Amino acid sequence: MQDFEDFVALRSQALLRTAYLLCGGDKGAAEDILQDVLMSMYGKWRRIRSSPEAYARAGLANAAANRWRRRSRKPEAPLELGAVPTARGHEQQVVDADSVVRALAQLPKKMRAVLVLRFFDDLSEAETARALGCGIGTVKSQTSRGLARMRELMGEQVLTWN
Picture 1 (spheres, rainbow, N blue to C red):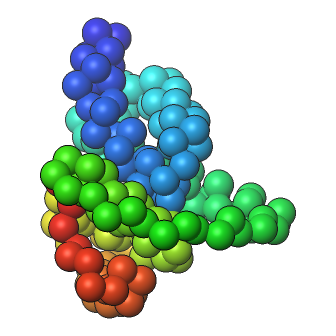
Picture 2 (cartoon, helix red, strand yellow):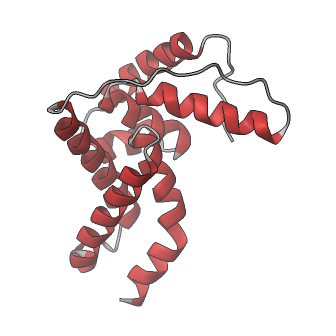
Picture 3 (cartoon, one colour):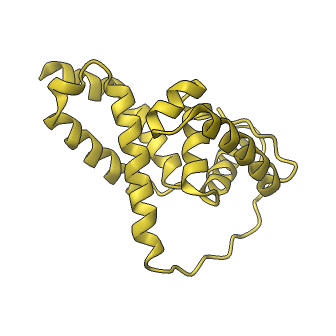
C-alpha cells in the first residue's frame, strides 16, 4: 500500500485545509473528519486508487455535513466576537484568513462546500458537482448565492485569500 502512503504524504495538508474550511474553522473537527475519511479510503484503496482525490473531497464534504447535522441537535450558545484589530503585513493576512473562515462558518453546509471546493480547491463546476453529487446548475446557483452572502457578511473586505 505504498501508493496510499504516498497519497497521504502528498495530499494530506491540502485535504486538511479543505476539511478546516468545511468545518467552519474548527481545526480539531477538521483533523477528526480527515482521519475518518483516510481510514475509510485505506480499506477501499484498490477500488478508489484511480481517483482518490475526488473520493477524499466527497468524503470530507459528507463528513462535515454529518458533523453539522449532529451538532444541530445540540444547540450552542454563540460567543460574542470582539473587534478585529488593525494589522499590517503578514498579520493582516492572518486576520483576513480568519475573517473568511468565520464568514464561511455562517453559510449553510452545502453552500460552504461549493465555495470551498470551487475557490479553495480550485475545482471546476463539473468536478464540484461530481464531488457533491449534485448538478452543475446547483453548483452555479450555490456559488452565486454563496458569494453574495460572503459579501454581505464581510462588508468591504476583499474576498481574496492566499
